[in-house]
Image (cartoon, rainbow, N blue to C red):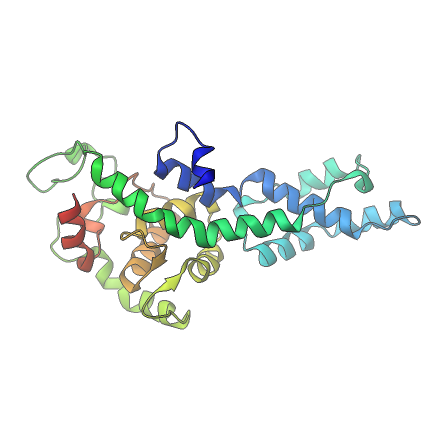
Length: 261
């Protein structure tokens, strides 16, 4: 809770969002790249030749860091531009990452954030929502005047059946291949699959927040199907809603979410 006290002026939802994205901020990704280059440099002889080799191998280094730290390709800088910029720098003067600090960050993301989820849920319960009441657009903020109100995340809003149902069998196949425990995927397992979509982690973080309806830091089969649906929505070029529309709430969560509101 000490970290919470260091973030005055932030609501818990903003703070959690910041924490979920911090590991994939451009500065952190750059730090991984610089640290890798520093580590591979010789201490005395052959510095210039090694520097040229590392610059030429930068695409391979990007791929290695991506796999090792589960970072989306969309969070990396432009490779050719970075190769040009690196030509004028002395790699031996770069600073390396401190492993202990990264371990602490991993612990924060995997353990502490899950403990804070109940606070986030309580905050959302207490904040009143100003929405349209009645009619087919019940629960939305702008009624039928939402841009693209019948497509993307708003597809199926006037249908009784959950719009995700038609594609749930294929999402279920992926879900169970990821070996859920007690019917749920951990955040780490879900993330490792989500980054394969090559969407930026900032987008995937928003999809995670929308999909983890019960705020337990894990995804059950319905929440995973919802996340997969939202990923497809984004890949098709549509925008994501700031809040989960009622028609996208998984069937098993509707009574629970409705009673909370």
